[in-house]
Image 1 (cartoon, one colour):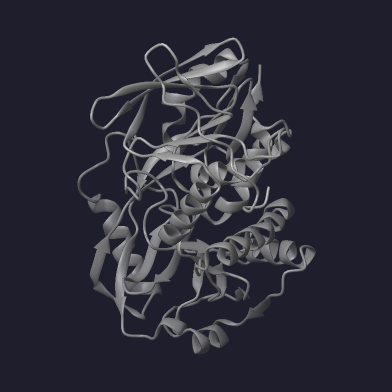
Image 2: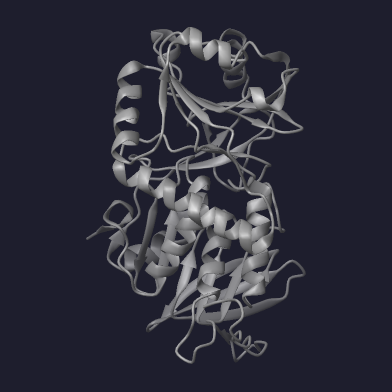
Length: 400
C-alpha cells in the first residue's frame, strides 16, 4: 500500500487469557527484520488497510549484539552468479526508494574494486558483463596511481556502482518507515517460548521489566540470524524441513587511521594469490567508515561462538594476521592505530541464506557476511514469502 492509505488499528492489549492477535509477527529488528516488518506493514490487507504487524527485538534499539550494528557496510556488485548480480541492482533500487521516502542518504557510491586471483576476477568480470554492469580492468600500476592507499600485484577490476551502505542509518530508516506504516515496534522484549496451535503460532514474550504477554499469528517471521537453530530449529523440523548448518562466528575487523582524503578510498576485496596468505584467509575486504578510519577485515575467519556468549577481547592470532596484511597491502593507513570491532556471522556451507517458509513460520538466517547490502530488497522478498509467494530456489529450506 502507499503510506497515505489508512493504517490498520493495532490489536487491543493482551491479557493473561487473551493474547494479542496480529496478521504478522516479526522477531528480530536487525536490518532483515526491520525491512521485513516495513514491507509487511506497507502491504494492503483484504479491507484495503495495512496488515497489523508486531516487530519484537530481545535487545535495545540499535544494539551491537548481532550483525547489523556499526556505521558502514560494503556495497558491491562483484558476484560470479547472475542472480546475485541482478539482486544487487534490485538492492540499489530498494535503498534509493527508502532514501526518497525518509530523506536520508543511505548509499555512498565510492566505487569498488576487486584484485588478486586473476581467475576469480575473470569470473566476476564475466558476470558483470552478462548483467550489464559497467566496469573496467586496470593494470597494477594504473590502479596504484588512482588509489595510492592500496597495493596491487595483479590486474584490478573496478566498477563504479558500488561503495558502502550507511548501515546504522539504514536500520533506523527501515524502523522509522515500519512505524510510519503502523507496525508496532517492541524492543527489550524476548521470545521466551514459541508453540503452534493449529495454523497459529503462539509466542510468549517477556519485557525488560519482567512483564509477560502473548502474541498469536498465522504468520511469524523469525529474522533471527545467528540465533536461528536455537529459536527456529524445532519449528522447522516439525514442519518437515531442516535448517542447513549455520556456523556462528565472531568476526573481528578493525578500523585503521589514514591521512588520505575520503575520496582516496573505494571499497575493495582482495583474493590473495600468495599461498601462505591463502592458507589463512580466502578473501580480505575493506572500506572507509568516515570519521572512524578504513575498515579492513578477513572474511569468515572468526572464532566460533554461541550468539549469547560473545568473546570479551579480540583474538590475538586474528589481529596478528590483520596487522601483517595491512602492513603489506594497505600502505595508506597507520597499522599502529588498529581499533578492533566485532560482529556475528551466520554462515551456511554455500554462503547462501535461508529465506523460506514452513507452515506458519518464515525463517531468515545464514547471511554469511554479505547480507546487509540486500537488506531492503530481502525484506520485500521475505514479505512475499510470508504471504504465499514461493521462495527463490537458492534460498529454500531442504524438505524431508
